[in-house]
Image (cartoon, rainbow, N blue to C red; front, side, top):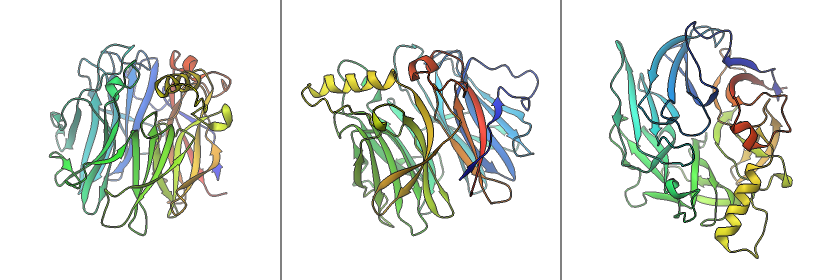
Length: 364
């Protein structure tokens, strides 16, 4: 795989004059809709929750060389996890609201906005509190959404078990469990991306913090026509911020890579109580360097093989991708600390500015 040099996006020379960005530019999504490239990004004073956070929606007619500002989402509290859905000739954008304390993760609700002829419609809440959206994609003629619950206690002294749910919708606004008999598709997981394979199976990658369900990640496959029946295999690596996509029909994953400890998240401290073991693992993870990496997924073996690192360092990994205009590669957007700061631990990057870049992936 050939990976181009990174092109600065935000901040970058193609941004519209007058668009003021914060120090932290991170969570994003990108989609090709109606022949144009759309980018949604979070900008805020810091990586952590802030009432000043906002989502900026940009649109490009020249493959990202220049951008026009289209919309701002500011709700007086943290906003993050933007997720586009280009579906039935409609452009939908989902996101979550959170709290205002930088020292706490306080998930609120999932929202949706729709781009109409005259602009963006007023947003609507589509979930109860304590829900975090991760991905929205078409499955079996409907829209499907993965979300997780229980994250409000994740980094506290008394976390509750996390659950991943798969929801479905026929209009993009009213949501319910994809399979009412199995609303929860994974126990113990958080961020869960999914993609439909050419043979109709659904492939998912789920990040796990432990102790419920174990530490690291799961790779799951569901049979055609039964999207909620996830059969899982564990991986000791933690694929934070997973993004799945197909390259010539082969599933690939972009996610955060742990540089230390052979890539493992769990340090194997089985002599500690599970709750303490989890906190030690999380602290060691926070204090060590990271990269954004590309992996090839084998859905039959339910395994992941590292392919390459993208230009990245410090605080990094929240990718989105679209096929290039010529159809021969993929245009990947991601955020990172300055890419020459490879020695920075994740915690240092989270406290310093981060920028959004794009790279092209092409077969080599």
